[in-house]
Length: 286
Length: 302
Image (cartoon, rainbow over all chains, first blue to last red; front, side, top):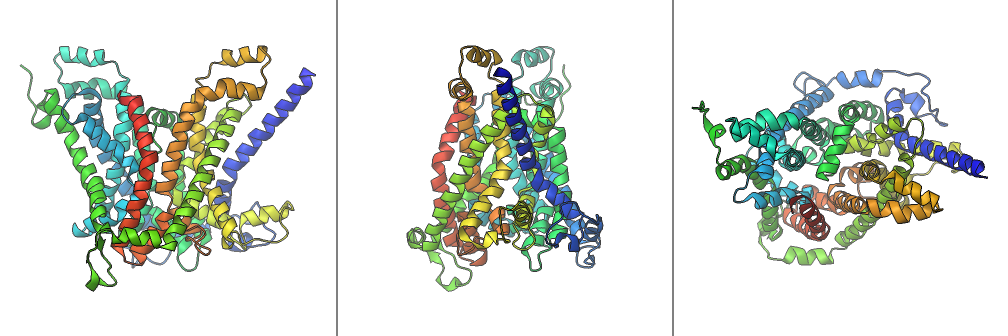
């Protein structure tokens, strides 16, 4: 009987694993299949799951949409892609720079206002973006930063910075104090010790924080949707327009969706270990 | 003597250095997070209607009073509660279940562990657009699949029927958010000693008994944190899914609070009223948030 029970539990496990794999992969796989299908094949009933005439036309049409006169000599898609890249990397650089120093200070130094700053950073979790979005709109308008890359970078930094501080602080706390003290006895300043001793040892934390920054900024929709239009429109905003504007274009949505999802998905797959450590270390939602 | 470099690099006294390093971040977070949050409170006390600017001015708590009688807002409260609570329950049950299966030994385990992160990493707008396409009434993959396996006789306009619209939105949300639970619970499961489980097997404890007596107590804390984070997240950050897939319809059956705020402010141009709505929602969120902050603060600071 034990042998029988083992076979049954093995079969149940196999069914469970296959069900999980299908559940996780099928929707995304369908997006990829749609992106390389022709319109006629996709709109056929009954639907065929393997595209009979695979094509890259949907991707090609993203780069050549005949709108270059309106969009600084590029297609709408190229313009958004470039905006997304520039905004994401700038936000990431700014968040990492300010975040690392702040995290070091709250992890290692005692100064008046340390607890208050930690609380201020953590309270950013309970700020509903939708409550900040309205005054944020007026502030950006007042500064003349609506529909500019700088405006969106500022906004992105605001909500990503606390995340970086939180993750890096966890990593800094896990580094033995003695290492830093040894460096200081050798004549190094505190910041010297941070740059030469602590940062190299926290490399996994830096990777983790940087990947979180990238994904958070790259994927951000609400602020970009409300604060940008033709000039600084990011990729998520453009994808939203493919599905919400008149004449829904699912083929281009699928192609643009695949392109937009490649960087975060690839980064998450490659740096998974770091991300999981960051998630558990910082207990953040990302 | 050490070489002195200019600026803040030379500060070494912890009090001054600490303040110098923290100040820029605090200014950014204060300026674009806390200040707008307070600004919002002021807005919520004003009649600030861009469509009828002649009536603008201070109105005290009148916006809040109107909100409590606004049946669209009250409907949004109900829809938000349904959407978030059902989502979170499913994200936790399904997430723990998947994590338990994935904690077993099977061929391809590390591959599946890697792939599970895909929905989490996907931009939420791509998730929303993808599901809007899958749920399409005439050509969607869900209709095609269900009719081809014989579960459905005719294509169904999922998002045109109130009950189904909410159910499919929850499906799309749960698909994207469950991996977060799985990842955290899997990490916690690694901490459950194998010997403990084996000893229980020797003692003749069944799988269900083992789960409730050994595994669950050891992952309970992380499951609680997950549930709180998922709750806060689904209440605060669900906008694009609803905006893209149903736009709050049909008949306001999926009209969650962020959608309502969006309509009132950016479409209706009633900024004061929208801000009051956002503020009331934020106050309701204070409870789960404070719980989370307290537990996180305790766990890491004290």
